[in-house]
Image (tube, rainbow, N blue to C red; front, side):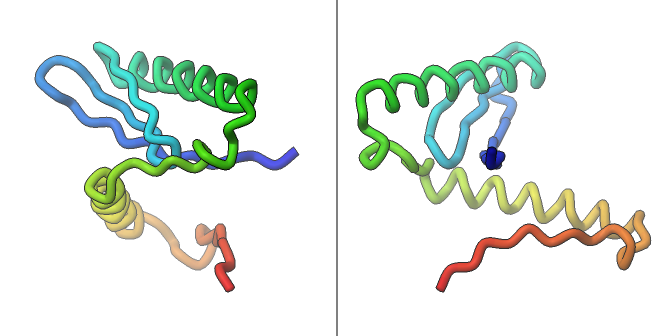
Length: 102
């Protein structure tokens, strides 16, 4: 069975961590990062169950989050990647994950 890779953005807002699944625009919160992740996973699972049970796949999958949320995600990912590249022997650590859009 194919594994699906969903992208999540977690931000701290005051004393709460807010988490959103970017492909489905499903959000949740938690007092810690771990709790926000756990709550988001549960919210995504419930969302997908509801969509499949209702037969609404075409209308609600994907249902992307806003462009602004995606831009925050890619900016954070680029920063993380830059930090990782500075500490690694590149040729042995690169693995490509590709999507062909043709």
